[in-house]
Amino acid sequence: MMTTSGMLIVAEHNGGNLNQSTARCVTCATSIAGARIDVLVLGHECSTVAAQAAALFGVHRVLTVDRPENAAPLAAVLAPQVAELAAGYGYILGPSTTFGKDLMPRVAALLGVGQISDLMAIVGPRAFQRPVYAGNVIVTVEVPEGLKIVATVRTASFKPTPDGGTAEITQARVDAALPSHTSFVELRAGGGGARPDLQTARIVFSGGRGVGSEGNFALLYALADRLGVAVGASRAAVDAGFVPNDMQIGQTGKIIAPDLYIAFGISGAIQHLTGIKDAGLIVAVNKDAEAPIFQVADVGLVADLFQIIPELEKKLG
Amino acid sequence: MVCLKRVVDYNVRIRVKDDGSGVVTDGVKMSINPFDEIALEEALRIREAGQPVEVIAVSIGPDDCQQQLRTGLAMGADRAILLETDTEVEPLAAARALLKLVEREQPDLVLMGKQAIDDDNNQTGQMLAALWNRPQATFASRLEIADGRATVTREVDDGLEVISIELPAVVTADLRLNEPRYVKLPDIMKAKKKPLERQNLAALGTDMTPRLRLSKYEAPLPRQKGRMVANVDELVSALRDKGFFN
Image (cartoon, rainbow over all chains, first blue to last red; front, side, top):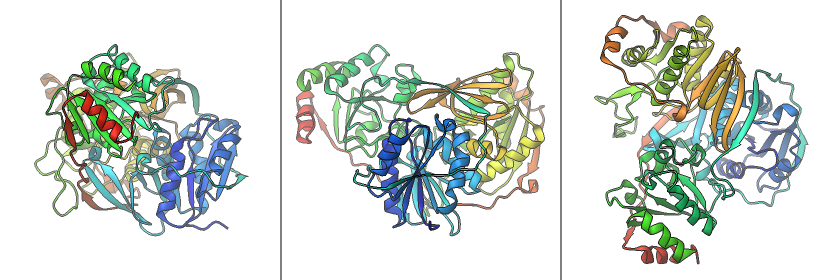
């Protein structure tokens, strides 16, 4: 029998593979309390994903709802199913990615509770910290007894749980009526191409307004491809049209925590720094010695990136 | 219907109050949440493209929110509604109040920013869509309306997702949906004559009970400033010392 303190994690996946954000949510859940952790996989023909979820260390059980309507991750379709299956759980968690941000508030509203966005640290079983004002302020949020806790987990704040689990996989039954008012049309892949995924890469190079143009980003891509690292960008570079939106790192883009982050021509607005503050080593190259990014960089170099990138390519490649 | 939240202007340097009860807002410049401004701009462009629609700007908050609604009217909204309250309004409570207005006004489309730049919650649009039992399209960077449906391009982690939704629906604006217009002086004068309805939020009778308690505000721990290197050779050896690119 499920207890009310049990935890349900909504898995993020693309139909074939589990997104690493789910393993990070499991780590968050294990840090909250000694409650049982179940993972919910909503999808279609998603047995590979369910098996990957079952292999995560710390997971007790994987629930799957396999139906054609779940082939694309449409919040309006998934939310009633999550809300129905949430009945036996005290905590319902999802990743603070665009998938989770779209879905979880809809779930919370159906359950009549608030949602904690971007849960970044655990103060107690019902108290958590999250960033507000673009990361300029950290607020502690407490949830009164008796209310379900619905949250999106700031993935960069938690390491992925390792494999090693042997959870059972069960088909869950859902009676909720699903709407037909929303349909998936297409997903156009972003700018990363064959490069490592920004949110899981060990090393990320990133360019800002200082890179100057879409054409100049080729320099950074060449260096990154030579070294096999991921490429991101600041909001300024995305707004200027140098790179596609999915490369944006920062409070309103992707929040990342690579082992090494090298920023080229990025001044370091607070909303950008919020997106990288959990990186292991931050390196900044900028010709402006006054750039705020030097206040947080572990290693800084005041120089013209157009000289530095070719030199780095020679010396590291 | 477009929802405009009054927030601390994005250029203001945020300071936490000494007692940790919130952030300093006395004497601080307040503005329309920038994402909401984009949402309003989109509504105005839909009207200017020839759709015979009325654009209603809505806000929830203290009496001072009239300033932001007047700015919205100056941008081009036809009329405005303020749901007045002096207490904090959580996203779920805001969604419940907005639902009341939606039931009264019967809009074809509700637009708002994907998040407010103060609490960064990113919840109200999704919650309203859930309570209304209608479609939602969050993180919109392109919106096309035809034959009672909207085709929305959404900025998601994997790239750009396109979905088709039946109207009425809730759409939340991302940064790249458009660039809001500047307000001109004659428009500000004209906006003074446009209708602005004020209603007491409590009189709506919606459930406003807080679900969360925000107990302590604090500045984040600063990351320590590191060291500067003089050239690429020093940079490369710093990286290799840390175990990278060996």
